Amino acid sequence: MGLEKSIQGFQQKALEELERVSSLGELEGWRVRHLGRKSPLTRALRSLASLPLEERRAAGAAANQAKAALESHFHRRAQELKEAQFRASLEKGSLDITLPGRPVVTGRLHPTTRILREICSIFQAMGFQVVEGPEVEWDYYNFEALNIPADHPARDMWATFWVDYTDERGRHPMLLRTHTSPNQIRVMEQTRPPVRVIVPGKCYRYEATDATHESMFYQVEGLAVDKGITLANLKGTLYEFARRLFGEDRQARFRCDYFPFVEPGMEMAIDCLVCRGQGCRLCGGSGWIEILGAGMVHPDVLRRVDYDPDIYSGFAFGLGVERIPMLRYGIDDIRLFYSNDLRFLRQF
Ligand code: FA5
Image 1 (cartoon, helix red, strand yellow):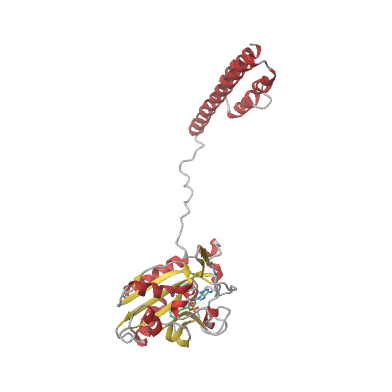
Image 2 (cartoon, helix red, strand yellow; image 1 turned 30 degrees about the vertical axis):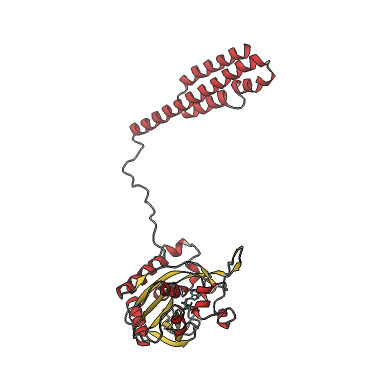
């Protein structure tokens, strides 16, 4: 019984003392004295183990009850003292309610998101529909159906991250898409001409990065298939796009290029803003920056999706998205886009 009585005594003494506490500093002293590691109550709790069972039960219950009571009174008193302190500071006039508030930091759109929206709205105004496709893609769509079979040397044009998929039937070649072109097949498999779509999305390449190459970047694929579509339609569409995006005074250049899924194939470049065509690090000294690959959809590709190439023809292009703001704002390194440096991102 001895310990139980003492515990009740500690509790009563502590509570009396608590009513005399008049500041938060004093309250902390009280907490250390009555609830701290060396307080009589904590010592009593520690000594319980050495008591006979009956006495231990009663004393243990009393100690736990006392601890809970002291803690709850402590929190009540702390709240009272904080409120009193706040009221006193209001009365003294030390709270200046005319001080301006802290500015709220607002987020902003990533430069890539902005340009993607702009590109999509230009093509939408020309009658293209926006669709999307998967980033993890089958070898079939990324290569095979685009006239690039397994042993085709053109596979070297796209250094690939393979993520093969294995199940009970074996290993199936899968990859992170190296371009948005697989969506040409996906779209044509699902619709009949006329087709007029753009497909924005991320692409991945297993290659060394430099000022104009990232291992993850965005492309926008374009595809138009109908009766009587010609190379003139392709050039007209891309010229118009460049004019709306960069204005009248920028130059666009088309040159022959090779892609197995188009015939003929070409690339389009824009004059470099950083050096105004003189040659710099960004344009590799040429004065031009390539922004897209394009061409007339290859008849074999049309046949693969059951479009008759004697009736239908089409054009396709694949545009490098980050290169657009680089050209427009004179950004001389693509790696700035995804290195999360706020000093760069806040400029947009
Ligand atoms: C292609 O990816 C083809 N699929 C384009 C195409 C589509 C041709 C339809 C014909 C018909 P290419 O590898 O050249 O082509 O890439 C197209 C554009 O993506 C380039 O002009 C460039 O602007 C951008 N690009 C390519 N690699 C990177 C990279 N590592 N980092 C940033 N942008 C890149």
